[in-house]
Image (cartoon, rainbow, N blue to C red; front, side, top):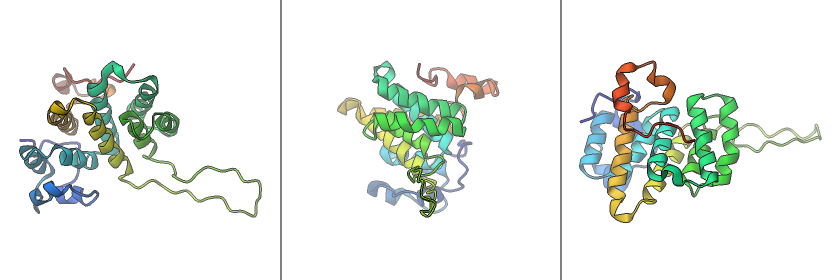
Length: 223
């Protein structure tokens, strides 16, 4: 049971979270008014609705925690077998998680686009990019009579959708007979992040009691 332990999730109910994405058909009958986020996760896992649980966690977690969770899943699924392009995209995402500044957000776009949206790493780097900035192209127009293109902020849950896509794509990369087990492992990682157990490195020293939960978790950034 994970109810009441998800300290990184601020929503008071599962319904509140599910307003921001389309819940999968098989999971819709499981949603009830008044269900806490943790209790809804219990129900989803009990009914083997792991893909819906991935969607739910990605939208329930803050962007920083969600992207970190995605990085853990990609490293667990791929380890050192990532291509150089995908490794660069993951490193860009991890760099922003460790220090979520504009200086680390904007540079994630190039490696994200290089890896592409068909790779988990590329989606995670793009999720990082979409935590701020503008979706409008940056142009330099010498004609002062032509107004500049106004900024178009990314939707607040665009990073969450990219993270969910990255994690599900990483799960598909495993052998078909182990897909369910892989998704379950990823959901367990997400719950650990939501509980504050699987954290990025600089938080470990601030919370010695959490160190035990971090052991055995692939929480180190990619080399």
